Image (cartoon, rainbow, N blue to C red; front, top):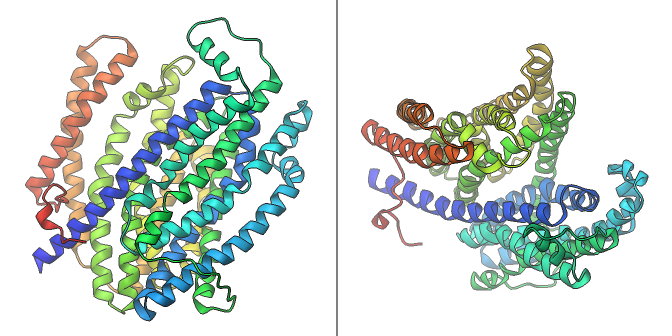
Length: 551
């Protein structure tokens, strides 16, 4: 039994590792994409127009295309596959694709027609800048079809995940970033000959060219077309694998199909839950706007660093866990479902606790190494690092939600996560008032509030899930206790080494940041691994393939 559980945990860790590597590549390419836009256009009129135009389709993507839709589809598709066979499952997949094409395609057409009204609603101040609103409208119309492409890509990802294919679907967003950069630069060079050459000349120290607003507008239009090309690539790269796993599209349309109704029934509350997250972001920005210059930027920088471990651990583990628990739920195998959830949550604790502690302890050198250049000062680094420490407190909560919330979808219950997410709006608002206005914690209070909400949401969802499934056993609590001890040992060892380096070495700030990161992080990793090994923490044995059954 122990050997079987070890193999299961190892297989889960291996699959999560594959997804984590794919997510890491996507995050890196996403950073490159942002840097390309910043270098080519700077923070000004044309980039403002692009960011605003992309906000609407990107918001819809966050609300349902890559979250609610994928989770609802995976749960329903897996249950249909297990209970009714492949033929019914492939029919459901075609039905969802066809329904999406009609509904989301219509939404895109409406968005294109109403682009002027949408632009005025989300950026009314653009009307005061000559040509800025018109440019935003043009870019909005170009990029609105991106929503349909990413919705179809989410279905493709759901099919492949249900068939135990995780790497390529997780890497699809990396292909989006790659396609949008390469395709965008190619289109910008085609529509605005000479613009990119002028940028390169300026970077290399040449004489800056005379700014031509019309040429810049043509160049950013090319980048918008590149974004659409990236969406095509995100979908297209998954199509060969769909054929490999047996999917064949059929022109079926049955709006009364029970499988389709289940997908929509699960999607509705899940979309509301995602909307609650967007409301919390808006509330936090509102509070931050009253904290003076820099607060919004510091929080944004800090959360960018948080997105990496959330994606590597929370999203990766949640992605590979959902098909497993959905399959067990379809067969009524509650004990197997409990075992899968226990192993996933243990993995979250093992990975997230040291990551959170490392981000909190080494926030200054990590932030400084990446951002402390030009006008981003040492004071900005310290402020962003303080926010990062506040965010890091809730890392395990963020990642844990990615595991337990989809488990409710597998149980055909999307309402519970949505209600908890809705409750988080009031909780977040109250904590913001207490920590920022009451206790005067400033922007760090907003980060702490976000973390406390994440931890509270996880605790509530976990408690409700235990009521539905029964106890997951003493494993998670015992593992968490040993992980916390190992993390404390890691902090002591790595903190001492960091103190010696900071006190003994006197070099330029960025070089010191690089030295601290290069020495502190490996020392912390070795100290944590050694402590876990001595304490008997069930570390995932990724290097020993004999622990993994063949897929």
